[in-house]
Image (cartoon, one colour):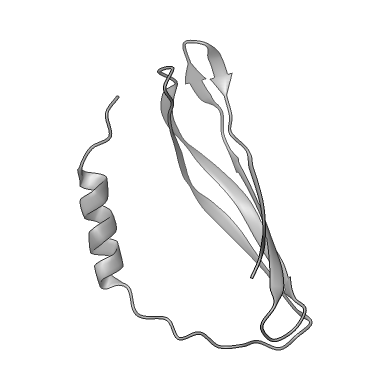
Length: 96
């Protein structure tokens, strides 16, 4: 299954409508958490293609006004393929 060129156009339109962000520091010892929902699309070399819904959570903590860390977990539903069910789970950790 080939990717359509419409995704690139959609992304350009989305970025064109976005507002510029102004960076600012935050108070230290500040915690944040957010829920996430969306879709997961799989396009693999071995013809394991499919799209499904998923959800996850992102959480973080600021040590200083300019330094903190963030943890992200994303868990989509299974995608049925010719080889059985497939699920890609993402764990991410970043220091910002």
